[in-house]
Length: 252
Ligand SMILES: O=C(CO)COP(=O)(O)O
Image (tube, rainbow, N blue to C red; front, side):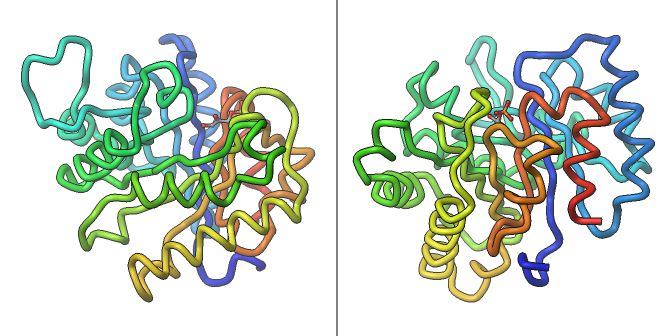
């Protein structure tokens, strides 16, 4: 496998989608996961309203539950926010931080993202740190500068590198059906790997680097078997069990 010895992770980010009735679709994902594990780890990041129940029913299954965001502090007067400790208490094993929709909609800076990633580690969660360039940045040849700056500013400090995942999500590829060429994905992932090894030493070689942005079953093989692509962060296609499992199939 092009991704070497690293066990891939296919994670679904449900974003602001999902009602109680979505438990049926989640059940289908759990039912299919057994066939894919232990070759591939599977995770669903549902909205917080569903995380508690999904985490409870997922106990003993091969699907882990993650949050989509967390506050940097463990508790306090922060109306509407959820801490990493609360996610862990709900049964989550990971949390996405620095998704481009949060960087844009909530004006989250690299420093904010870093504080959230460190909060994830503090709570014993895996931090899934998202980076990725805007279309204009790619067109002007600034992709590696932008991604390098995001990594420098948002990766957590500390020694819990086993609890780190980086997701490369080009902003222009999210929800658009557009994807970078395999060569472009390979270039950015190699750059992220080099940066991780520079930052964390040998442990950086084991950090999973996910690709995200319009991944679907039909393009999964092309995108997810590139060197240093160790899985996917899937948006829209993760809402349908057959599509989500069809993506993870590439690692079977
Ligand atoms: O943002 C994403 C996952 O976090 C990707 O979304 P889509 O797969 O819908 O493009």
